[in-house]
Amino acid sequence: MKISVIGIGHLGMIHARLLKQRTDIELIGISDASPERSAYVSKELDIPIHESIDMAIAESDAVIISASTKAHYEIAKKAIIAGKHCFIEKPITSTYQEAVELIQLAEENKVIVQVGHVERFNPALMSLQSYSIEPLFIEAHRLAQFKPRATDVSVIHDLMIHDIDIVLWMVKSPVKHVDANSVSVLTETADIANARITFENGCVANITASRISAQPMRKMRVFQKSGYMSIDFAKPSVDVYRLAQENEIPNTAIPAMMLGEIDAGNQSKAILFEQPPIPSINAIAEEHSAFIRSIAHGDPIAVTAHEAMEALRIAELINTSATRTITG
Image (cartoon, rainbow, N blue to C red):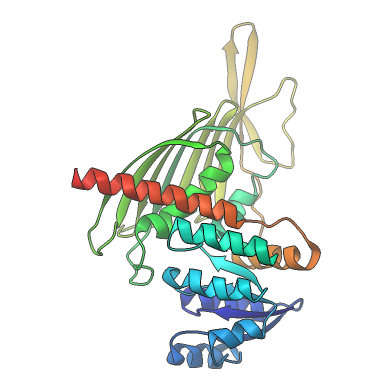
């Protein structure tokens, strides 16, 4: 399988470096709007340079699109029409309508589109695969220090969209209502934002994102009837507090200790504390593996264009709600 990387900024270079190490595909080249950047990455990683995006698409079976968000639609459209599979970095496109059009094109041309919501592959989140996740309330904080790159979009589309995607994936219920506030400090778009999302099943998610924080943070807390989960995407680590099942003996493979017995009517409930083992994986490399398996073996797409489109739709609702709040 021949793959090219289009857009080799900070993230694109990571994609290229990891793909270069694989033996199940051939990284045939890179392409970037900046000739200087292309030359640097080509020399650093010993990868050929495509003369143009059109050539990168024509010579590849699949492309990794990690150019600026504003360029995603046009590049992906060309690739899809040419019948090439696409991995598109998040957000899938600049606007919801562009995402709708790409999905229609992908269906017509029978190509696979996976979107780079990389936190789905975070080792902390992967460690929860054996747990039942049925949230009633979610609180998330994603704070970062200011970086000049990625300021072509708001903090909602840059950082918050990670948590929007995870929350939608966890809750699996239509969004009923969105309230939001945001502040522009260093850029022309929102640099700090908070959103409260209410779902039709009654779950509520409170999400905060900032790209001008002194200390970085990527944490999420999930409250549900059976217990509570605290996820640190940065460490990564997970703490789980849950009610023990009747006559349950804690699995010795998972560190667990009895916090206490609680009288609840005629029954006694035991609260367990667990720290599930964190797998030693590279999230971006796992994204690549999932993308390649979908193309080569027909595996389900890990993060579909439809899921990414819905995350983008909610991000737009949050942005509209926040703007309306600011302007009064």
